[in-house]
Length: 277
Length: 317
Image 1 (cartoon, rainbow over the protein chains, first blue to last red):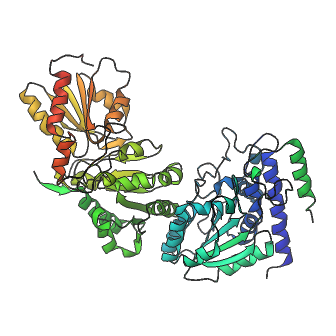
Image 2: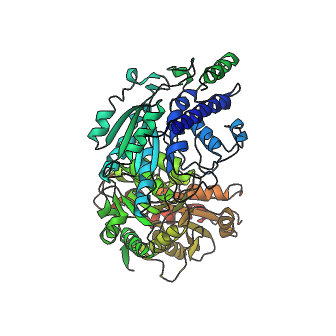
C-alpha cells in the first residue's frame, strides 16, 4: 500500500490535468475532451507516481516509456508533460495552432517527452512491444506503458501485437485499456462490439488486472502488481467514464471531439473546482 | 556475364552487418527462406524476430526497436511490406524518420509464378510518395551489397526493392555506391536511357542495337529512385535529344515519373516510358516470359528510342 500522501498527490495532479485539458480546448478550439478526461487519473499515476522519468532530460536512457496508442487523447499527455516540467505551461495555450510544438496527435519530432508518433489507431501496442524487446536485448530494466482505447480494440493489429507480446514473453510492458465504452459515434456495444475484453486478453496469454480507472489507489496497486508478473505481459483493464468529472461531457459521445460553448466551459471549470480537496 | 540473385546478396550482407554491429536486428513475416533473412537467423537467432504472418505488427514493432536504438530490417515480399503495412510505415516510421530498413523482396514481376497478388508493380510509387523515405533499386547482387551497407549507415527509413531471380552482374566490386547518386553505365551522344533494376542490362543491350542504327545512347543506372536530385538529372540530359526511361514497375509513379518530374519545364524535350502499363501482373512459367509479355525488353527500349530520335528530330537541350 502506498501512503495517503502519494495518493493525494496523484489525485491533485489528475485534477490539474483535467483543468489543463478544459483550458486547452477553451472557447476557440475543438478537442478530445472525453477520451482525455477518461484516462487522466491513469496518466497522472504514471507520470507522478510510477514512471522513472526526468523532465529535464527527456531522453534519459533509464527512463520508463509511455505511449498513448489512443493518440487523439494527446491533450492529457500534454497536460502531464507540462505539469511535470518537460516544457513551459504556456505551450498548452498554443496547442494545435500553426507552428505549435503541441500537435493534434503526439509528435516525437516536435514535443519533448513524446516517445513515438501515434494516433493512427491500433499501432501503439506493436510499437511498445518493439521498444520493450529492444530494452530487453540491451538488458535494461526500464518498463514500457501503453494506453489503448476500448474502441481501438477493433483494430486487428492490436491482436497481432497481443499475440506477439505473449509469444515473446514481453513482461517489461504494461498495456492499459481505457475502457470508457464509447467511440466517436456512440456506444461501442451498440456499434462494433469489442467486448468482452478480459477473456480475449486471457486467451491471448496475458495477465489481466481489472480496476476502476478513476480510483487512484486501485490504479497504483495495479501498476505495482504488474511488476511482479514475470514471463507474460500484463494488461490493466480500467473501467472509466468518458469525460469524467465534467458533467455535460460524462458518457456523452458528442464530446469525443467537440467544442464547448462559453456556458459549458464555465460549467466544466466549476465541476472541476468542486473537486478541490 | 555472371549472374547472382540480389536476395542472396542481401541476406549475406545482413550477416556481415550483424557481425559488425550488435544493434542490427532482423524481423521476418514467415518468408525468411525467400527473402534470405534466414541467413541472419542462422547466425544471430537472438537478434532475429519471426513475427509470424502479420506484417503490420512487424512494421510497427520495428519502429519500436528503432526507438530503442536498434537498426531493424523488416522483410517480406515487396507487395506486402509496401502495401499491407503502408500506414504503419507512413505514420510512425516516416513522420518521425525512424531508422527502419524495409526490404521489399521478390519485387516487380520477379515472383513470376505467383501472379498478381504477389507481384509488386506499384511499390516504388507508394514508397516514393512518402516524405522522408529513401527508395533504393539495386541493379545487381554487387550493388545490392553496397546498398544494404549504405542503408544501414544512413539514419532514417529506407525501402530496398530486391529482385528474386539471378540477374547479370553489371557493376564491379570496386565501384562506389552512394545514396542519391546516378551511375553512367555507357556513354552516348543522342539519347539518354534512365533505367533501374533488371532493366539496366536490357537498356545496355538496346544501346548496342541502337548503335548499329546510328543512334548513340547513354545508359544511366538510377539505383536511388529517391532522393533524386533534379539538377543531376537535368545535367545528365544536357545536349541530348530525348530521354527513355525503363523500369520493371508501373509507368505511374516510378522511375519514369521521377525523371519526368525532374525534367518538367524543359520545353520540346521528348520522353518515353518503358514500364508496366497500369495493369497488374499475372502468373507465368518463367521470369523472362513475363518480362517479354509486359514489354520489358531491350527491343521495347530500342523502339522507344527510335520513336523519339529515329528521324533525328527534336531539339538538343
